[in-house]
Image 1 (spheres, rainbow, N blue to C red):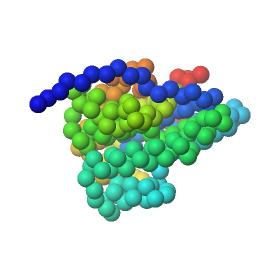
Image 2 (cartoon, rainbow, N blue to C red):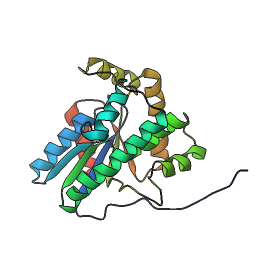
Image 3 (tube, one colour):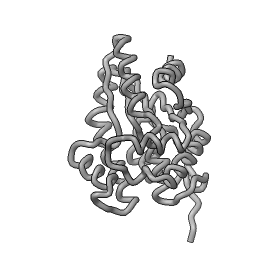
Image 4 (tube, rainbow, N blue to C red):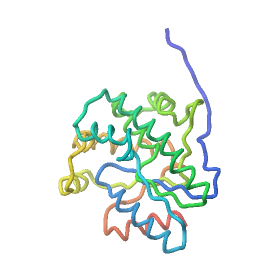
Length: 223
């Protein structure tokens, strides 16, 4: 028997004096570079900084996640998403919340929104309104048991698929499981869907051009 369930709930907002900024997008979109550029920008303005990323590469969970992402270890896709979620809980408690309480500018390479895009890809494989509530709740974004603080600003860096593939091929690192052409195609659709579903939360930024130009586009959207 099917049961129809509906709910209305707001996202958990940042109640602290710090500023929380996140960069999202497909692999190869320039998130890491722009996170560093933004950190330098805010430092030049005399702001205290906390630059971070999700998932973390260090620690007990970070080590396991990296082994799965690089293909060294295998677990069911839903299990990987729960690892992401658990690492995010610890990340917020250990890094993000203390920094925001201290009044710092927190700049994160990925945040909770990745859980929606990649979680839907892993669990269902398509982006429709029928799947959104399930993933939003299961990934703890709208859960009554735990909600993550949403960033004050979330920027999705938009670049063509071929540009991303070229950048990924040029990096001196192990190719991760999501850095596959067909998966990247789906993730692009996922971020387009996400921006339509949450237009007040997500700002799409043209990620093409010189890195300094992209940084200025982001800064202009903040100030």
